[in-house]
Structure formats: structure tokens, C-alpha cells
Length: 470
Image (tube, rainbow, N blue to C red; front, side, top):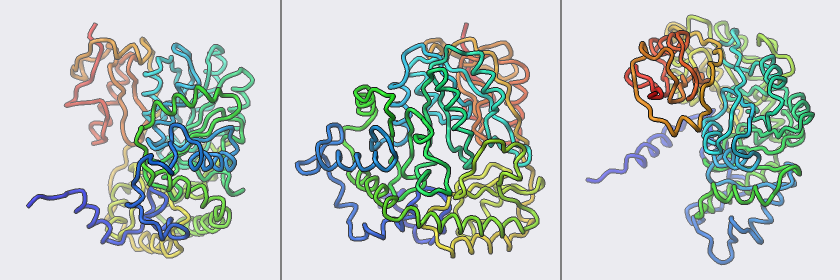
């Protein structure tokens, strides 16, 4: 008999009645039950037939919906993205910069940013990440290093920054944008995890309101919208004709109307119910975190627990749980899965949960009960100590590396060679070395450290590394 493995896996998962503290924000359809319960989503899988408008040249329904989206977020123009935040990040980079422009970029940004930099042939200058040793995680970027780069690279045309990061940490974007604007630099914000920002005064502000030029938000991460949906918001500083071209270029010509409907609904939901529902969610998160902090072997992420929280904000709807040093977060994540609680991510020392407004009080109670019941002997294990990475010397800009011959050699033989690929341990997702940078002994030692501790190191194959063959 022929099988359908994906259908079988989904059917089994749905049967298990899991509590979801992970993406997407609609929590297996709960988010659509206020005003879309009547809608048959499968029947809505239509294309651009008469009466349904055209995403690439909207004239009525899509045009009106994107105008409502723009009014909600305060943009000059907003777009529905059916290829995810990845397409939005590419559209931002191509719209804002010219080839060979120098840009300052967070070292731990999403890989679509790195790809956009290569495709547009930009010259990146990377900002170091800082490891918070109270949480053993890269919670913030190194602001001292940012200001140093800012002063050393007065010819930089822009900044690309993530706000918030996976842990819900928001840099001091107001100050950062002010400094950039004083130099005429464009500020592009990957706000994939912050589509709900600004809807409630208890949440961090929407980056557009702080002066960002372009902002990408993943609708599906926190809002009631389908996976793969996102928004792009553009300020008055941008040429809309150029943005129109690149948004269209990076979008499918066969957009899913199920996606479009869900994005329209997510906007509608925020306007109709957002403030009240986020009040409730934030209260639930605060109460839950207070109770979690009473459990002896764990603590939650808060500004008072961070090594350096100057100027930063935390998304109050994100729950980050840190364990004692002799306990392992991957094991805690597996334990919670056995209790039918699905978390978003674990990094060895922490687990990250992403509640949405569609998690009920009973979900938080179930999480608390599971944590209180946890036998710490079950989750004993080593934690890998993440290390701050000094940015290696750049020999070639990344796009030039694509043109060169490369070969894989043993790590032990790589000192003095130029790296041919991005080497990224995940977690934490901060590159050790990027393509075009010089490999030295400290880089080799750090890669070996992660490999030895069974961390997945993207770019390393069979203990070999790609180098430029010169």
C-alpha cells in the first residue's frame, strides 16, 4: 500500500492534544475561531481569478487590505509576503542599498540576511554578540563594539539589526536609530518575532515608530496567521517604486489566498481584540514566570537576572527558562514533550517558549505543574559553555568567495587558509567564522570544542572545512 508519511505524522501529532508554546501563533487553529470558524480554508485555496484581485498589481480587495495594514502599523506602505520574512529581508536589502555598499550587520542575524548581502554584493562589517554568562546564551549584541564600528566606518550606508532576538531581547533601538540617522544611514529591522509590538503599551514599541526605514515582521510567529506569512513595512524615506519591484521579484506569482486571508485576519484580529487579549496574555506570562522563579533549580529571563541590561527591553510575552549548571535544557525539553508540552527551542542551558494570546490559563498551569513535578535526576547533564567570538580578519567580501574554487581539508590543516563557507554552531546560531575570513588557531580550537560536545556545526563535514583553493 502507498503511504503518505507527512499526513500520518501530522495526524498522530494532532491526535496527541499537545499544549503548544511554539510557533505558529494561531496554536493549531485556535486563533481562527473568533471570526473565521465558518471558513473552509481548503476551499479558499484559489488563485488570481476574477473577483479576487492580483497580489502583484492590487486594485481592490488586496489593495484595501494592505492599506488597512499600513494604517495599523504606521507605514508609508505595507506588503503581504507569501514567501515568509526571508523574502522581506531580501527585498529590504535590495531596495535600500547599491552594490559594493558597506553595511554594519549583527553577527547573529538570520541566514537570509547573509544571503541577501551576498546576492546584492555588499561589504558587511559585523557587530560582535555578547554572551550573558548568567544564562550562557548570546542575549545581546556588543554595544561597545557597535559604537566602535560606527565611528570607524563613517562611509557605511546602513545598519541591519534584529529586534527582538529569539530570546525576546530588544536592543536599545531608539538610541541606535538616532545615531544612524545622524549619519544618513538606512536602518533595516528584521522584526520577525515582533509582529505584535506596539499593539499594547506594555509591549516594546513598533520599530517604525522609532524611525526605522524598513521593517519585516513574521505574521505567523506570534499572530493568527499561517506559517510562511509575513509583513513588510516601509517608511517615507524609501522609493516605493523600487520596493514594489523587489517585493514582486522575491514573491511567487501564484500566491496562496489562504495565506493572504490569514494575514488579513491577523491584522483584523489585532485591531479588534489585540489590546485586550495582550493584556490577558501578559498577565498570564507574568504570573507564570513568578511561579517558575519559586522552583529551586530554574530561573526565568528578566532584566534583573541579566549581566548587562542597560537600555534593552524584553518581550513580556516570551518565557525563557534557565537551568542550574549541572542540568540540561535539551533533556528538560524532552521531558516537557512527554508531558505533551511543546517548547519552541532549547540551547542546552535554556528553553524558550512562545505563548500567544490563544494559550489559555490552563496551558500555563500545565506548564507549571510539569516543572514542579520534574525529577532533576532525569534532566542531569552537562551544559556546553558558549564563548564570545572575536571576529576574524576579513580577506574577501562574501560575494567574492562564491566566484572562487574551494576544497574541503582537515580542520588541523586549515590554519592560515581563507574560509569558504559560513561556520555556525546551532545553538546558539552565532557564526564562528564567515566565508572570506582568515582561519587561525583559535578558530580551529573553537570549532573542535563545539564538535567534541556534539553541537551541530553548520559548514563542517566529517571534521573537514571548506577553504578557498589558492
